Image (cartoon, rainbow, N blue to C red; front, side, top):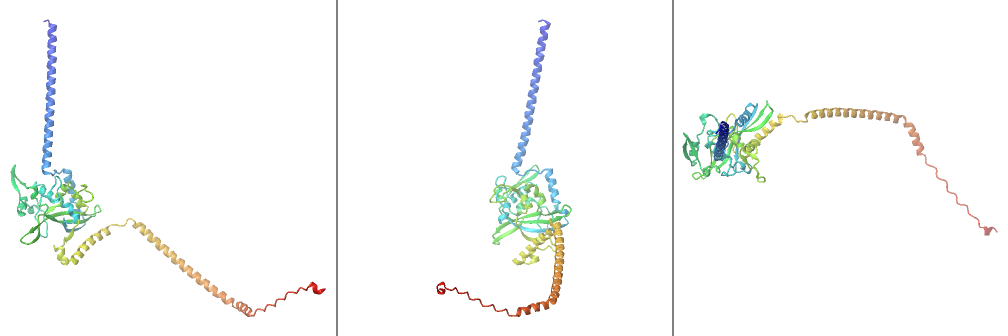
Length: 386
């Protein structure tokens, strides 16, 4: 083999080696991309599975910031009125907070959502104190204590050094929470001219029939600040109408738009008394006190705003006064003119009196009798004259 052919063989081998390297690199890159894609898909699948298991998404920084701004809205107010209401879920207007009694897929009522949030340590609850609410760490409620106190069956498991509580959905007493004690504040913020009502906190009430007492007993469970649960209930859609079954409103909309119906049981006062203690136990006195509170709030709001046509009202008022003055001056001028005319008429009557007497005398003379009519001339007969 000559040198020239030897070089050709070497060049061919080099080309073949370069192609093999290129193919190997391509296969390596392809496999690397596939592995990365699989890792991404598996991580996404893992996150979606976690979300599906809990059913509660994690909050973003934007949602937390917005929630904090809304919570501070009432703090800067120059006028506030705090009111406590009983929200009875057995009334049709409040039924969206109660149904479905047991969770159906992703749909759950308010207490089921609260229960899951507490079991996953996403929100904190505070102990119920009679007549006052203290939302500090010293009054935090332990979830296991709640389970034990209200006799809710559960299973405690140790996972990663933490205790996880598992409760069967059928054991969640969401159908027994028939009442909520709701604390709301009506406020006026002078800085931005806002007059609104905002929910501060709520307390679920467990209603159970106790055989020992022979009647239903109300047991307050714990206090929840609305600030903590707002971001979650803002993503929980509910059905609010029997005529439209679409889930068009969230639970947060239900509270913000004041779609609920609640009986006033207390207002914040210096002596910390309930409304029945202040007004009396009679139904008429209590109803009158409740209506008075509602009327006071409406009256305060009405005094804040100036009617949109107030400037026109002032102009119309001035115009009416000017027209009234003109009308009065015209009336006085007319009266004066009529008085002068009457005086002139009286003078003229005094001057013309003799002439009127003469005419009256002449009128008194008897009228001449009419002359008798002449008889028609008789026509003589021609025959007689012959």
